[in-house]
Image (cartoon, rainbow over the protein chains, first blue to last red):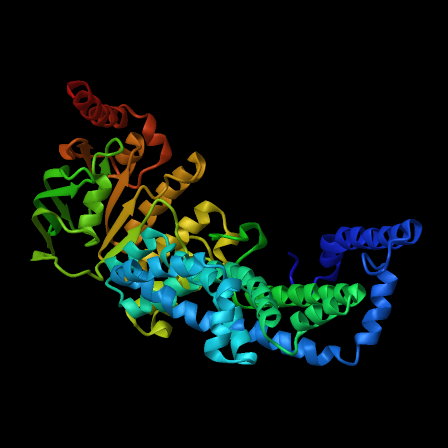
Length: 264
Length: 257
């Protein structure tokens, strides 16, 4: 991952990917044309493009709704998960009490409990945000807790040897030490939040890209479905890179070679 | 010379998973005098690092007492600096900020200690690297930073746990000379753990030989070689004689075991 602003680096890094994507799109277009694939089965890229242009007037509203659910859900997950991770690290009792139900909750497919949340919270954005948050929550708790505990034991010995106060050890040692772990969990969490938001919109919503896919499917408009899928993946990628930009700004010492410490 | 730290019949037991206890140290008595350079040498598992941790107030002895400056040491003390086998610097902090880390952790005024931090960095030959991040330095340079970090709050006693175990042999010799220079200039008391016999003799006023299962002191050998010491002293018959005593102490206990 090149540093922000290093354009030569970006081209070296992503040039091949872009070439492969272009080749796939061209092959797809030619293939659809030669094999005369019906448009309801697999529309050609050109058809998806014209459909996107037609959708253009309604798209901003749907994109806004979905983006709100993603970002909202993601932020709620962070705000809930980080204090829990800290609590679990500092209290063996809490760890014993919190982890089993947390694992139970994680084992239940969120798609299955989404209708329940909808019933409790009502139809609307708040439900979508909470559903996205439940999906994004778990990796942040586990990875942040791992990071807070990953401090080299010698450093803890050192702080003990001169009797440093616990809050200082937390703020100046454990928390910064956990940052790379925290960010690697955020990368997972943001993609989970996208899934959560779309699932929520599938289940009960009258706007958003998830709703748009469902509506297009009802109308047998395959090209529109593809169009929304592409937009969703672009949103997913942009959200992911937003996290990476934050990571580079907040932990500039953390170099690419050491990427993805911890993990879930 | 006045006694700085004293271990009096100290033992340390660890409970193991199977339910029993293992005696890591048995009846260790050691008197560290002020300005003395003491090396602890022995095979791995002989408890030399445990002795260091007890001296540093990181773990408590199961039995026996630790006196520091003649008083029992119950709470962590600002009179002790520690250097470990690995530099364990904070990767997000510059060299200067790593050196100042203990000052911040103690809640002291950082600007008052800035001068001392710069002097120490100069002392270990890292002037110009104040703003560098640890990952930009070699292992030997990182270890120098960790020595500065241990000295910045001016502790009387410097505890070093195989500090050059992870650097290459050439850097190691250089670092040994450097530690002796620092020790001389700063008038510290040093307890230095190593598993290198020649290193233990080369550095020390006194070599303390330990053997494992349970960790005991078998020889406490004063080294009467002139100072400042130089690398070529290692080839003198006197040096060899000292090294042989240490080696014999380690191996004879192995044979009897």
